[in-house]
Length: 243
Image (cartoon, rainbow, N blue to C red; front, side, top):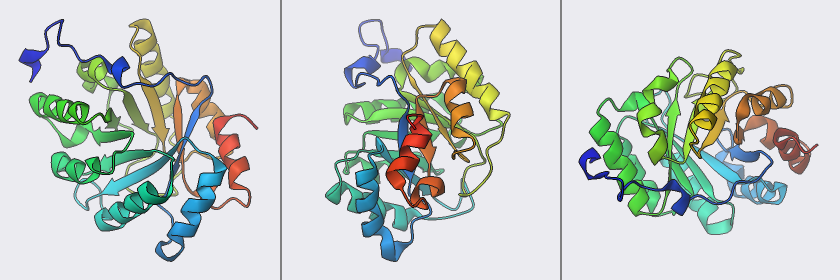
């Protein structure tokens, strides 16, 4: 896959990348939504005006929990009733198989974990497959993964998702040390002129959102704080930093 990347063939992320808003985008994680209330919750979240619905997909292998069937049902429902784009986060070992299941829903972006794949050729094949389907490409890293692991791919993707908690469970507290990783990544991409979104996911709420924004993020993922708020629109604005 890498051999085909001559100067004339280098994938220009800008062909898929929309102009970036100056303010931080908000992706609402639906990991904690109860199944019997899902459609009602999704309608209410639509009026809160987040930029994305964040779909956390887990296979019971890469992470302990398995919600493959539930998240596919949720994502399908959202794609039918909402105009808010899907931000799909794959916490799975078999990235290609699960990725294929979501491409038909035309998500805005699909993000997979660098820790799930050791073969760089396989990573580039996944990038090419997503590109050919008009889907933006993200790579995620766990709290202990160094950004050096993803540097070879930054010119070919749209987003890096920095996990600010250990992936796989909702309701965890943000790991403060991950803010330094976000700052390091922001400095690197800015210094090298790389046009890419930095997304943060985990423990982001009223108390932590400002610090995460200031570290240099473009997209913040927040779940329970928004979903459980009496005023979800206000909660989204708090995470975005406009209130």
